[in-house]
Image (cartoon, rainbow, N blue to C red; front, side, top):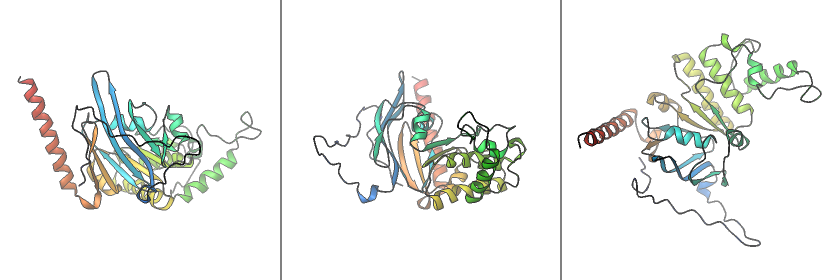
Length: 293
Protein backbone atom coordinates (compact mmCIF):
# COMPACT_ATOMS: atom_id res chain seq x y z
CA UNK A 1 0.00 0.00 0.00
CA UNK A 2 1.19 3.50 -0.79
CA UNK A 3 0.71 6.13 1.90
CA UNK A 4 1.02 9.62 0.34
CA UNK A 5 3.45 11.95 2.06
CA UNK A 6 0.82 14.39 3.31
CA UNK A 7 1.43 16.77 6.16
CA UNK A 8 -0.21 16.11 9.49
CA UNK A 9 -3.73 17.22 10.43
CA UNK A 10 -4.12 20.79 11.48
CA UNK A 11 -0.70 22.09 10.43
CA UNK A 12 -2.24 24.00 7.51
CA UNK A 13 0.69 23.36 5.16
CA UNK A 14 -0.23 22.66 1.55
CA UNK A 15 2.00 21.18 -1.18
CA UNK A 16 3.62 23.89 -3.33
CA UNK A 17 1.85 24.66 -6.57
CA UNK A 18 3.81 24.22 -9.80
CA UNK A 19 4.98 27.48 -11.34
CA UNK A 20 3.26 28.53 -14.54
CA UNK A 21 5.30 29.83 -17.46
CA UNK A 22 4.95 33.55 -17.93
CA UNK A 23 6.09 36.19 -20.38
CA UNK A 24 5.92 36.51 -24.16
CA UNK A 25 6.53 33.28 -25.99
CA UNK A 26 6.59 31.23 -22.81
CA UNK A 27 6.13 27.53 -23.47
CA UNK A 28 4.58 25.17 -20.95
CA UNK A 29 6.92 22.35 -19.88
CA UNK A 30 6.26 18.98 -21.55
CA UNK A 31 4.01 16.56 -19.72
CA UNK A 32 6.13 13.78 -18.12
CA UNK A 33 5.67 10.34 -19.66
CA UNK A 34 4.14 8.96 -16.46
CA UNK A 35 1.49 11.73 -16.54
CA UNK A 36 0.37 11.43 -20.15
CA UNK A 37 -2.50 9.07 -19.38
CA UNK A 38 -3.67 10.99 -16.30
CA UNK A 39 -7.12 12.29 -17.22
CA UNK A 40 -7.92 13.86 -13.83
CA UNK A 41 -5.62 15.09 -11.09
CA UNK A 42 -6.27 17.04 -7.93
CA UNK A 43 -3.58 18.72 -5.88
CA UNK A 44 -4.06 19.97 -2.34
CA UNK A 45 -7.87 20.30 -2.52
CA UNK A 46 -9.26 21.83 0.67
CA UNK A 47 -12.78 22.59 1.86
CA UNK A 48 -14.26 23.80 5.11
CA UNK A 49 -17.76 24.61 6.29
CA UNK A 50 -17.45 27.23 9.00
CA UNK A 51 -15.25 25.72 11.74
CA UNK A 52 -15.50 22.20 10.26
CA UNK A 53 -12.61 21.19 8.00
CA UNK A 54 -13.94 18.63 5.52
CA UNK A 55 -10.90 18.32 3.23
CA UNK A 56 -7.31 18.96 4.29
CA UNK A 57 -5.44 18.66 0.99
CA UNK A 58 -6.64 15.86 -1.30
CA UNK A 59 -4.11 14.64 -3.87
CA UNK A 60 -5.57 12.17 -6.35
CA UNK A 61 -4.92 10.87 -9.86
CA UNK A 62 -7.27 9.08 -12.23
CA UNK A 63 -5.81 7.42 -15.31
CA UNK A 64 -7.43 6.96 -18.70
CA UNK A 65 -9.55 3.83 -18.78
CA UNK A 66 -9.07 3.21 -15.05
CA UNK A 67 -11.73 2.33 -12.48
CA UNK A 68 -10.89 3.98 -9.15
CA UNK A 69 -12.75 3.16 -5.94
CA UNK A 70 -13.15 5.80 -3.22
CA UNK A 71 -13.35 4.39 0.31
CA UNK A 72 -13.87 6.16 3.62
CA UNK A 73 -15.91 6.16 6.79
CA UNK A 74 -18.81 8.58 7.25
CA UNK A 75 -17.35 12.04 7.79
CA UNK A 76 -14.02 11.19 6.14
CA UNK A 77 -14.63 13.74 3.38
CA UNK A 78 -15.34 11.53 0.37
CA UNK A 79 -18.83 12.97 -0.31
CA UNK A 80 -17.49 16.53 -0.16
CA UNK A 81 -14.63 15.61 -2.49
CA UNK A 82 -16.99 14.01 -5.01
CA UNK A 83 -19.21 17.11 -4.96
CA UNK A 84 -16.16 19.22 -5.79
CA UNK A 85 -15.33 16.94 -8.71
CA UNK A 86 -18.88 17.33 -10.03
CA UNK A 87 -18.81 21.13 -9.74
CA UNK A 88 -21.43 21.21 -6.97
CA UNK A 89 -19.01 22.73 -4.42
CA UNK A 90 -16.09 25.03 -5.23
CA UNK A 91 -12.89 24.11 -3.37
CA UNK A 92 -11.40 26.59 -0.93
CA UNK A 93 -7.89 25.77 -2.03
CA UNK A 94 -5.87 23.52 -4.29
CA UNK A 95 -6.09 22.86 -8.01
CA UNK A 96 -7.81 20.44 -10.36
CA UNK A 97 -6.38 19.36 -13.71
CA UNK A 98 -8.21 17.64 -16.57
CA UNK A 99 -5.88 16.10 -19.14
CA UNK A 100 -3.07 18.23 -17.77
CA UNK A 101 -4.92 21.54 -18.00
CA UNK A 102 -5.92 23.47 -14.84
CA UNK A 103 -9.68 23.92 -14.51
CA UNK A 104 -12.04 25.66 -12.10
CA UNK A 105 -15.45 24.04 -12.13
CA UNK A 106 -18.13 26.63 -11.37
CA UNK A 107 -21.19 24.38 -11.64
CA UNK A 108 -22.41 20.89 -12.48
CA UNK A 109 -23.05 22.12 -16.03
CA UNK A 110 -19.46 23.36 -16.21
CA UNK A 111 -18.22 19.93 -15.08
CA UNK A 112 -20.27 18.31 -17.85
CA UNK A 113 -18.70 20.63 -20.40
CA UNK A 114 -15.35 19.25 -19.27
CA UNK A 115 -16.57 15.68 -19.72
CA UNK A 116 -17.48 14.79 -16.13
CA UNK A 117 -20.81 13.01 -15.62
CA UNK A 118 -22.31 11.61 -12.43
CA UNK A 119 -24.80 8.78 -11.95
CA UNK A 120 -26.40 8.92 -8.51
CA UNK A 121 -28.31 6.19 -6.72
CA UNK A 122 -31.69 7.66 -7.72
CA UNK A 123 -30.53 7.47 -11.39
CA UNK A 124 -32.61 10.55 -12.39
CA UNK A 125 -34.70 8.51 -14.82
CA UNK A 126 -38.34 9.40 -15.52
CA UNK A 127 -40.27 6.18 -14.75
CA UNK A 128 -43.11 6.89 -17.21
CA UNK A 129 -40.81 7.65 -20.15
CA UNK A 130 -39.47 4.99 -22.48
CA UNK A 131 -35.90 3.76 -22.67
CA UNK A 132 -35.05 5.88 -25.71
CA UNK A 133 -36.77 8.96 -24.23
CA UNK A 134 -34.71 8.65 -21.06
CA UNK A 135 -31.53 8.27 -23.10
CA UNK A 136 -32.26 11.58 -24.86
CA UNK A 137 -33.71 13.37 -21.83
CA UNK A 138 -32.91 17.11 -22.07
CA UNK A 139 -31.10 16.51 -25.36
CA UNK A 140 -34.00 15.50 -27.59
CA UNK A 141 -33.61 15.48 -31.36
CA UNK A 142 -36.10 17.66 -33.25
CA UNK A 143 -36.90 18.65 -36.79
CA UNK A 144 -36.65 22.35 -37.76
CA UNK A 145 -34.59 23.31 -34.70
CA UNK A 146 -35.49 23.46 -31.03
CA UNK A 147 -39.14 24.36 -31.65
CA UNK A 148 -39.80 21.62 -34.18
CA UNK A 149 -41.33 18.15 -33.85
CA UNK A 150 -39.55 15.44 -31.89
CA UNK A 151 -37.63 13.07 -34.15
CA UNK A 152 -38.84 9.94 -32.36
CA UNK A 153 -37.85 7.56 -35.14
CA UNK A 154 -34.30 8.93 -35.24
CA UNK A 155 -33.98 8.78 -31.46
CA UNK A 156 -35.23 5.17 -31.40
CA UNK A 157 -32.72 4.21 -34.08
CA UNK A 158 -29.78 5.93 -32.37
CA UNK A 159 -30.76 4.61 -28.93
CA UNK A 160 -30.92 1.03 -30.17
CA UNK A 161 -27.60 1.36 -31.98
CA UNK A 162 -25.85 2.96 -29.02
CA UNK A 163 -27.06 0.35 -26.54
CA UNK A 164 -25.83 -2.37 -28.90
CA UNK A 165 -22.47 -0.61 -29.20
CA UNK A 166 -21.91 -0.65 -25.44
CA UNK A 167 -23.32 -4.19 -25.14
CA UNK A 168 -26.43 -3.35 -23.12
CA UNK A 169 -29.28 -5.70 -23.96
CA UNK A 170 -32.66 -3.94 -23.68
CA UNK A 171 -35.14 -5.92 -25.84
CA UNK A 172 -37.72 -3.12 -26.12
CA UNK A 173 -36.50 0.48 -26.24
CA UNK A 174 -40.14 1.62 -26.15
CA UNK A 175 -40.62 0.02 -22.72
CA UNK A 176 -41.19 2.45 -19.85
CA UNK A 177 -38.28 2.75 -17.43
CA UNK A 178 -40.44 1.67 -14.48
CA UNK A 179 -40.91 -1.77 -16.09
CA UNK A 180 -37.18 -2.48 -16.24
CA UNK A 181 -35.09 -4.32 -13.67
CA UNK A 182 -32.78 -2.39 -11.34
CA UNK A 183 -29.74 -3.45 -13.35
CA UNK A 184 -31.33 -2.35 -16.62
CA UNK A 185 -32.27 1.05 -15.17
CA UNK A 186 -28.72 1.52 -13.90
CA UNK A 187 -27.39 0.57 -17.33
CA UNK A 188 -29.66 3.15 -19.00
CA UNK A 189 -28.45 5.86 -16.60
CA UNK A 190 -24.80 5.00 -17.30
CA UNK A 191 -25.47 4.81 -21.04
CA UNK A 192 -27.04 8.28 -20.99
CA UNK A 193 -23.92 9.65 -19.27
CA UNK A 194 -21.55 8.09 -21.79
CA UNK A 195 -23.70 9.19 -24.73
CA UNK A 196 -22.93 12.78 -23.72
CA UNK A 197 -19.24 12.21 -24.60
CA UNK A 198 -18.16 11.81 -21.00
CA UNK A 199 -14.47 11.27 -20.31
CA UNK A 200 -15.01 10.66 -16.61
CA UNK A 201 -18.00 9.04 -14.91
CA UNK A 202 -18.67 9.10 -11.18
CA UNK A 203 -20.87 6.23 -9.98
CA UNK A 204 -22.57 6.44 -6.59
CA UNK A 205 -23.29 2.95 -5.16
CA UNK A 206 -23.84 1.44 -8.63
CA UNK A 207 -24.67 -2.05 -7.30
CA UNK A 208 -26.92 -1.01 -4.41
CA UNK A 209 -29.84 -3.40 -3.75
CA UNK A 210 -29.05 -5.56 -6.80
CA UNK A 211 -29.00 -9.32 -7.10
CA UNK A 212 -26.08 -11.28 -8.53
CA UNK A 213 -27.41 -11.31 -12.10
CA UNK A 214 -28.09 -7.56 -12.20
CA UNK A 215 -24.74 -6.82 -10.55
CA UNK A 216 -22.98 -8.87 -13.23
CA UNK A 217 -24.67 -6.73 -15.91
CA UNK A 218 -23.35 -3.49 -14.40
CA UNK A 219 -19.89 -4.89 -13.68
CA UNK A 220 -19.59 -6.02 -17.31
CA UNK A 221 -20.76 -2.59 -18.50
CA UNK A 222 -18.22 -0.76 -16.31
CA UNK A 223 -15.38 -2.97 -17.52
CA UNK A 224 -16.47 -2.58 -21.14
CA UNK A 225 -16.60 1.22 -20.92
CA UNK A 226 -13.22 1.49 -19.20
CA UNK A 227 -11.26 -1.16 -21.10
CA UNK A 228 -12.74 -0.84 -24.57
CA UNK A 229 -13.70 2.85 -24.70
CA UNK A 230 -11.06 4.32 -22.40
CA UNK A 231 -13.61 6.01 -20.12
CA UNK A 232 -12.27 6.72 -16.63
CA UNK A 233 -14.61 5.82 -13.79
CA UNK A 234 -14.74 6.69 -10.09
CA UNK A 235 -16.87 4.40 -7.92
CA UNK A 236 -18.16 5.27 -4.45
CA UNK A 237 -19.40 2.16 -2.68
CA UNK A 238 -19.60 1.09 0.97
CA UNK A 239 -19.53 -2.58 -0.03
CA UNK A 240 -15.85 -3.54 -0.27
CA UNK A 241 -16.68 -6.76 -2.11
CA UNK A 242 -18.20 -4.67 -4.91
CA UNK A 243 -15.09 -2.52 -5.12
CA UNK A 244 -12.79 -5.53 -5.46
CA UNK A 245 -14.95 -6.83 -8.32
CA UNK A 246 -15.11 -3.49 -10.14
CA UNK A 247 -11.99 -1.44 -9.47
CA UNK A 248 -8.37 -1.36 -10.58
CA UNK A 249 -7.21 0.83 -7.70
CA UNK A 250 -8.50 2.10 -4.36
CA UNK A 251 -8.07 5.41 -2.53
CA UNK A 252 -8.84 5.46 1.18
CA UNK A 253 -9.85 8.91 2.40
CA UNK A 254 -9.22 9.53 6.07
CA UNK A 255 -9.67 12.83 7.91
CA UNK A 256 -9.97 14.80 4.69
CA UNK A 257 -6.94 13.33 2.89
CA UNK A 258 -6.09 10.38 0.68
CA UNK A 259 -4.34 8.28 3.30
CA UNK A 260 -3.79 5.15 1.19
CA UNK A 261 -3.46 4.62 -2.56
CA UNK A 262 -3.29 0.93 -3.50
CA UNK A 263 -3.89 -1.27 -6.53
CA UNK A 264 -6.54 -3.92 -5.96
CA UNK A 265 -4.11 -6.66 -7.01
CA UNK A 266 -1.72 -5.58 -4.24
CA UNK A 267 -4.15 -5.89 -1.34
CA UNK A 268 -7.07 -8.05 -0.25
CA UNK A 269 -10.60 -7.72 1.02
CA UNK A 270 -9.48 -8.89 4.46
CA UNK A 271 -6.69 -6.29 4.61
CA UNK A 272 -9.00 -3.45 3.62
CA UNK A 273 -11.69 -4.54 6.07
CA UNK A 274 -9.19 -4.82 8.92
CA UNK A 275 -7.78 -1.38 8.05
CA UNK A 276 -11.21 0.27 8.11
CA UNK A 277 -12.24 -1.51 11.32
CA UNK A 278 -9.00 -0.49 13.05
CA UNK A 279 -9.43 3.08 11.87
CA UNK A 280 -13.00 3.18 13.19
CA UNK A 281 -11.91 1.81 16.57
CA UNK A 282 -9.18 4.45 16.80
CA UNK A 283 -11.65 7.24 16.07
CA UNK A 284 -14.12 5.77 18.54
CA UNK A 285 -11.47 5.66 21.26
CA UNK A 286 -10.44 9.26 20.51
CA UNK A 287 -14.05 10.40 20.72
CA UNK A 288 -14.57 8.57 24.01
CA UNK A 289 -11.42 10.17 25.43
CA UNK A 290 -12.76 13.63 24.59
CA UNK A 291 -16.05 12.85 26.31
CA UNK A 292 -14.23 11.73 29.45
CA UNK A 293 -12.25 14.96 29.79
